Every structure is written in C-alpha cells, then in structure tokens.
Image 1 (cartoon, rainbow, N blue to C red):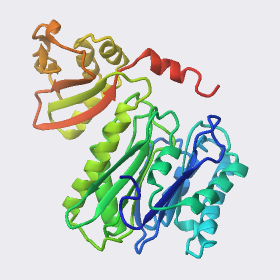
Image 2 (tube, rainbow, N blue to C red; image 1 turned 90 degrees about the vertical axis):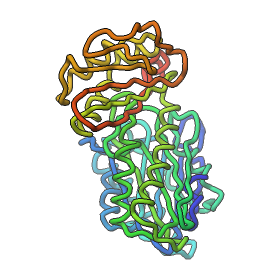
Image 3 (cartoon, helix red, strand yellow; image 1 turned 180 degrees about the vertical axis):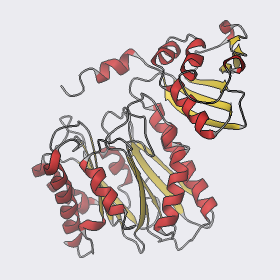
Image 4 (cartoon, rainbow, N blue to C red; image 1 turned 135 degrees about the horizontal axis):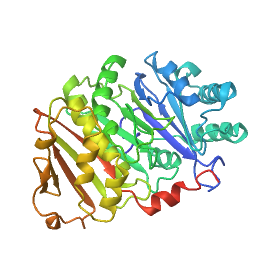
Length: 389
C-alpha cells in the first residue's frame, strides 16, 4: 500500500544511527524499470538544502534509478562540504546497486534529507546505512521505508490507488511541522508502474500537488528541504491518458496531505478553509492562506471560540478582490458574518468536533479554493521550543 505497490519497485528502511532516538533513519526506493522516467517539484525557499540542489540537477535528465532518503539531519546550510556529502551519498548508492550486478549511475540517483538545519551528516554512519538498505530492499519494504523518513511524525504516511487499465500509483510522505509548502511539502516519494514520459509525469505532478500538498499550510513555515519525487517504472505496460492519470495521482496526493494534516505537531483541530466567490483561483488561495496563517484564529479554534472577526481581518490583509461589506463567513455551517457584519448568533456554532470548516465568501466571482490547516496549541509550542537542544 506504499511505494512498492506498483510493479517494478523495491524499498527498505534501516537504522543507521543518525537519530538520537535510535529509530530507523535511512530509506531507499529502487526503480527496477524497464522505464526510469521521473519528475519532481521542490521547495521555493531561497535557502535550499544540498540534497534539493542535487536532485534538481538529476531530475532535469528525466530519469531516476533510485532515491535515498535520510532523517536525522537536513544537510541544509552546510556549505560546499554539504553538497559534497550529497554527491558522495549518490555515488555510494549507485555503487551499492552496481555491486549487486545492476546498472546505476550517480547522475540518476535522487537524494533527500530531513531533520535539523545547519549540521553535517555523519557520513561514517550514513553510507553503511545506504549499503544495508540496498541489501534489504524488497517489494515488502515500503512500510519500513516510510517509517525511516519520519522525524517528529508520530505515524507513517502511505497511500495508493489503482488506475483504469491496470496501473497503480503508490506513495509515502513525512512531515509534521514546517508545513507551508511551495510546490511540495516536506518529503514525498510517489511511484507508478504506468508507462509515461518525464514530460507527462511533470505535468501530472504539478497539477496534482498544486491542489493538494501545496494547499496544506499548518504553521506558515516553509522548509528548506521540501521535495516531491515521482518515478515511473513502466512495468505495467499501460499508457494512461493524461487526465485520468492526473486525477488518480491527485487522489493519492490528497490522501497523503490529509494524513500530514492529521499528524501535524500538537494539532487537535483539523481546519478546512473554503474560499468561494473569488475573482480568481489565485485570489481564493491567497485569502485562504492568510486565514490559515492567522495565529489569532488558530488559537481561537483551539479554544473552541468561533471568533469570525479574526477571519475577515486576515482576509483584509490580502490583495484579493472583494468589498468589505460583501464578505460572508460561515463556521461549521453557521453564517456568523453576513455582508461584513454580524450574522447568525455565534453561540450556534459547535466547535467540539475535531474537524472544523470555515467558509469565506468573497462575493467577487466564480472561483474557489481549499486550504488545509490546524489549530495552534500549547503542545505545538512545547514541541518546537527546544527542537535543537
């Protein structure tokens, strides 16, 4: 039910000693082909980790033989030696695959890292871990791989769907904090046994992530390492149509995004922000993201206080097209704000359920968008108050 659900893929997750917790921390996903087509999207943070820089270059060739992922260290802001470590990791994985009589080159090896920013990875532990992961890789290794990429995640995140015609898409993801992505979110590996070109994969991946993983915004903090990698083995021998494949891929990404939301650091309430009546989709996203990033609103939802004023004040900070006296806001179906003023009695709003829906009607056009976020709790503050110490 993960990255090894599609034909042509093996995976593993092992303990290399990178984490102080003693939990698994190195994973590999191997594409045994016959195709090695790939595409990826990355963080838009201008401060990007060495593995992101490396994998950007790899993916420009449109082919990925394998990906190695580590938790326990981000390898971000580590200077030239950090990039050299990434290169060495790719070279080591390629050599480990080659030693088993299989072809591989470092130029087709993607690398992903996650963890604390600013410290070099212990290569004396990482590289033996890569070798061990290659030795253990199998069709049964998808769950172990998903486990090994966790940091503050409390559970693994995996998903899969079967498409029309007999192909499959599988995926795994990690992320519990720093979820405010641009094109991607934290680390995510998607696999398919469909037979598609790199250009076809790229188009489908960008359309899928744009309305799923890119719409998850739990804490307004963008990671330096966000990567979503899609690999195709072609082993099913099926060439699906673009629309059908993109829709199936979107379902997998939406499933993973929801799992990331449910496991967000310290979260108690899962908040869905629906922006309707927007002049453009971009306006809807802008307004929704502003609401999602309002710490005042997130605290109110945590305290089960339907304070709609915090919603419209957040919308008012954006450049979205709207007239203040035409704004409407509903919280869990109760229209507490009508025409920019008080609407139904706020005491009618029931905020006891875990899932909360906030609807914002801009009354400015036909477009809409959904943003996923969470409440802000003392547990989130506690978890992030001493992360590096």
